[in-house]
Image (cartoon, rainbow, N blue to C red; front, side, top):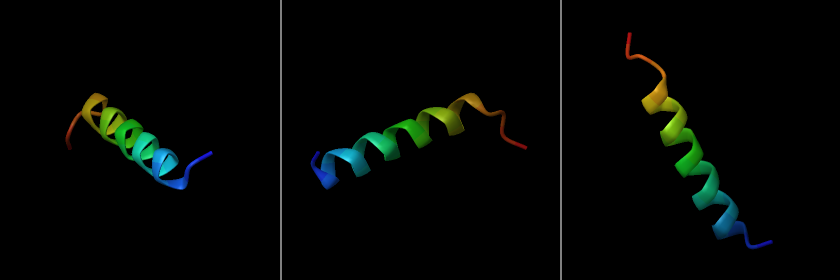
Length: 24
């Protein structure tokens, strides 16, 4: 698979997880 695609997908997933986690 494309490395750029992987990095983009991973970064988007991280952002989604951070949005779900309440900010302390």
